[in-house]
Length: 420
Image 1 (cartoon, rainbow, N blue to C red):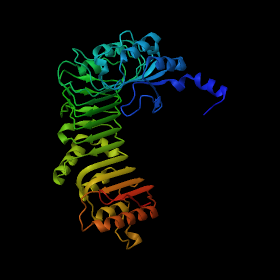
Image 2 (cartoon, rainbow, N blue to C red):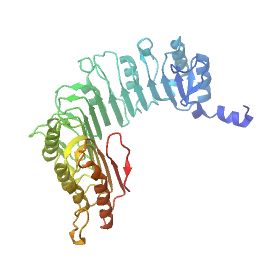
Image 3 (cartoon, helix red, strand yellow):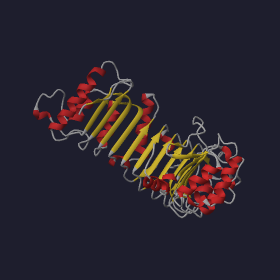
Image 4 (cartoon, helix red, strand yellow):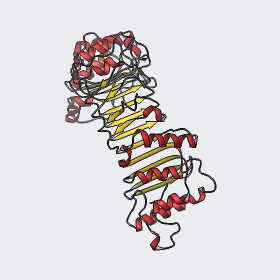
């Protein structure tokens, strides 16, 4: 295929078309392949020099992966001599080549986004020392280090993900790492244990996600807007509660009521509760304790409620919705035993309608979206749930409480039925 001279000139002199570079191909890609997923594949120093020439001074998105290259050192030397490291905006390291090769002499003044599946103390130090524009840092594995990371030189608001497998040991200080960040706005920790070494204060933190984390120290997060706990715990006591005046979204998954007791939130916009015990009575007690003692009254003003994989009966669900009277969205998936009175409360009248005088204000009068996915519904009520649900929605619409979206899934393998 041939193209005109002007078109070829434009392509070869538009740096951003050549700014995504991958050193090393994929395992499944042939060695002669030149491009994959928008990245220029560079297997040899000659091709790398050519691509860097075409990229000119454009910011570079660089992926380092060497499973199919015989001499990665030559490619690293090419990067070093070309001074391309000064243009790297995004860096992704996919494998453990860093254990045998280093990036001595590299500086990263333009680096904004870094994802390191493997790293080393020397590389971390080089990034921390020069990447003052860094905005996102994700570290999955690092060689043993006597200290944590030092983000003191980073001037931009930072999002930090730590997914380290060896942080249970004292050779890496999670506390030292996160406390060194001047403007930390989002923090995600995975499979870690942070010992009780005093109170951690994050004045600028807006989002905190803990995945299988045991946090032993107290937290002070006055600006926190989103808190996600996935099989994790944070220390809270009745006389020292976790006060989150700015919290807007709370996600709790696979935890007990004791793990999040005494959270004090101002007004939660979105409440997500998931994977509570499949024992119905145990699940109900945990929900009751959580909502009544832990985060009340913050949840009463929630506009969006997500209950996923929970066991709950009609009476408790009705009581929750009755208290959360300003809900706009409801998403329920789980072992929910719904009966006819629940849908009558949703409609504000008896079903089927016998008299126009029997109408009352329905629960959740501002409701716009209701998605219901049933698991383990009893055979006695299953044939009627769809008709009750649909009739309740129709009555709400006639009485001035219309829904914009309503859907039902009657079994785990069943198709979703859109009732509106």
